[in-house]
Image (cartoon, rainbow, N blue to C red; front, side, top):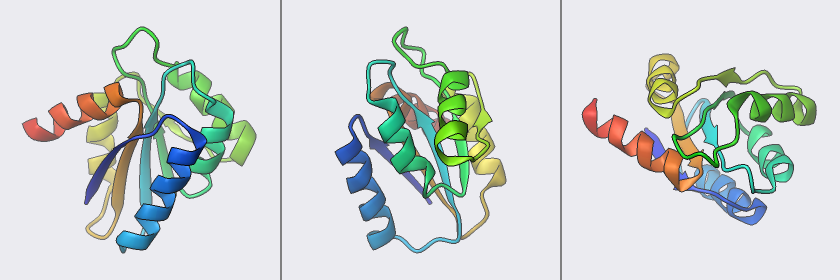
Length: 125
């Protein structure tokens, strides 16, 4: 199962986390995260990374996109988890689908640009 959501604040990330655990049953949560640079990244990433069993960081084609390497460093520092880096959303989506098992949930979230690019990839597969 795949969930797409647009998260741009700490509160919206908390709401997404709550909705995922209240409405879905899954073994592992695979997160694909990509954000714009101008967001409260440390706090948003701290909320997200605490629940992700597997974390993939990426970026959209938008010039304001935060670099995946930067997101990865922040997550490692905040949560001691080791995300996987992909420089584009299509490759991140393909990897998430590759590693997901039948009972896993893939959640693609962050900027609207990442969600939009992911939707295009999912339509094509």
